[in-house]
Length: 376
Image (tube, rainbow, N blue to C red; front, side):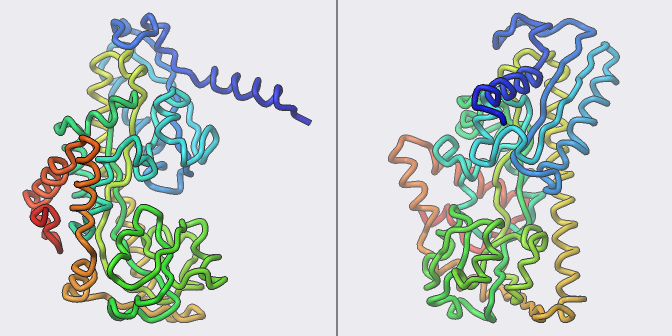
């Protein structure tokens, strides 16, 4: 039987094996002169979630191999040897930011929505629902804002991270045990939500029940909740329609929920040419991830329409009109104004972030259901 000392030794050995080899190229301090030509860099990529999720899988299928291809094409003899540790092998979802920041992995997915204390301004889309249903557009905007807006860039750098590429998911819909034909049907209902999205239930008369994809099925099966506000790409994987056969396409929009990042100490030791490549491929990672997310989403919706009637209980789907969606969004208090006030009281430029975000969205053709920034 392994005792605690044996486990500690094993973990230490594993982490030691996963440390970047860039210290062979520099003195091991941030800001050191980058390595010379012909250097091999041993980097670890990781995530708390499995590769079946696009924001993790694309790290392995596109980011690392494409970085390697372009590094080789430089013709300078640089080599990157990747070790990969996904699916929580090294850390769990509550430690995504700290695990990259502390160098447990060099490159990893950071779940910003669980890092409100360390990345408060990165939560802006949680408090501005129904701005866009296009995750590719959302990621394009945040790839820009995280590079050009000092307040957002600082949320990465002060945590010893460098931002590489944004994450966003398909639009949020409702999956319920009862027909949901209007906001009025939510009154008194218990609805499972990821903790950070509970505010979207305010004003509807529904009761928000804390939950996650891992709990939704059992929660509805046991009556703890009667529905879930969730991503279609997520609920199909857990077969939630078996217990929640009513699908209401309320389309409360996509959100920005995290990003691919690299440890800043590792970053500082890499040659400038490799840093440039990683930034470029990081933005490509966002695009590839978005394409996979929307392919999953459209396939799922096609199944609901084409084959949902064959399931028992039969699946029923309804798409809400713009007017129905407006009724929900306008029923909410101004959660964006509350978010701004809370953060400004802490000395953070939340108004600047909200204004820049909404302006960037409109400049790209987005038509928000509610002008959150204009109600401040």
